Image: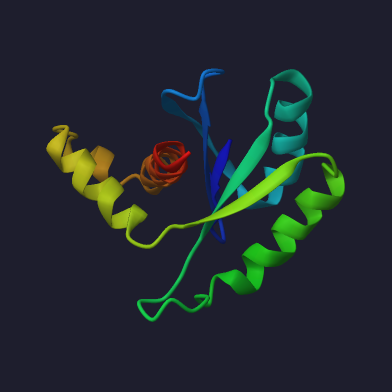
Length: 132
């Protein structure tokens, strides 16, 4: 499972059991993420959670880590046996937008932030899958 954390919404993606393909799940409100993840993990086989780690161009933590880090720490407490990894998510939102244009999404769909968040989570998971 991969999560693209945002202040208001979180994109979530999962892979198949063989770790071949990533697919997006419906975007989750950030305030509902903990309940969503614990519920999903209780019903489906999840062996690790990949968290998008927003970095600046200099490779330093972005301002967003201020609210992402506590959220991840709460998830770690709720799921103590789960493995967590962070993946550099620089440019995933921009890439998601470019992918929507390439795929021929209508302008109204490209403006849906929830769809972009979902696609960013898929990109984060694909980055992880490609390197493992």
